[in-house]
Image (cartoon, rainbow, N blue to C red; front, side, top):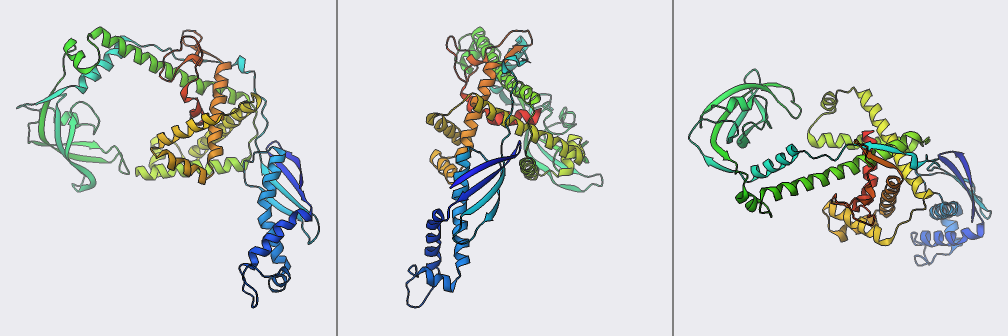
Length: 468
């Protein structure tokens, strides 16, 4: 078998596959055996029917069709390997020459990745926010810690701001009819949190235990979002929340530290590490966005259409699970259906270009993958999914998802390569050495360490193109 490749466009090629008839003979023999096992001929055991008898009963053309259908996938796969082509779509196959006893010719047209000319990556420069942590940030975290250790005490008084209460709610329309699904009993709530309905806090403050009051508001979720309603609230229980004083006794109870200063120093360091991780994520997004914005990448429209349909179905499924109609979603987003489609298509196109860019970096930099890298990535994916690792591995093997996992690792390494070559500065003008950033946000002292999350960069690249 031999094959030739013809470029039809930057994103589409045509394979011409030529197979001598003698190479087709094993497939023909297999077809006779398969068909012979399916028919019953008096005097012959199943599977032992001679080819001549099969031709008489079934016809030679039927055998040829069976044989060619069985052989085509293997020939196509071999031609792809010979041409070193990674297809992006299912091929359009045409059997151009096929006569009994003569050489066979097949053509296959398919979409492929375009070759992209990358910009000078060393010239890419982006700016991210400073990793600044204020005293107010530290105080907010410590206040949250104190709040988690707060105790509640029964009180014999009217409800006040900050109290932990238990309430019943019933929502009625303006005609006084109960609204199905818009009621709750024994609902815990902290007055002043503002996490439920507008007007609820004001209605509860000053209300005595066991008392009921009604206030007007609008529903905030589901199909009835924005519907004007009258809500009757009954106060079942009132408890006062007492937050511990910030002293050494509290610090030693709530943490591993002995003094307030030690706790504050630890909180500040953790916040700084988190800010560094935010810087790294922002930098990855901006660097990839910058490269995507500078390259010219023709896109195969069939791939765009398939991805667009997949994204659309995913969004509709998520809305269905949330009990939100598409019209309600559009209203919340302030979009028309046409604007939604245009924005979705832009995101899809940017996402595909981002993948092509990373694939080009892989090719240009000759990035490879080690078995242990793939294994670690698969194990991480299994952990993220909450599945048993063995079951997860079996699933990806059975559904041929290994190439997808390989691509994720390679694209993650490609994104790391982009980050190493680009210049990243914070808002103060300081050049950031993100290559020394560990997975916990700390900085390596000497040797540059690879971020453990680099293998996840493919999904982050897709998220970046969604935000672009």
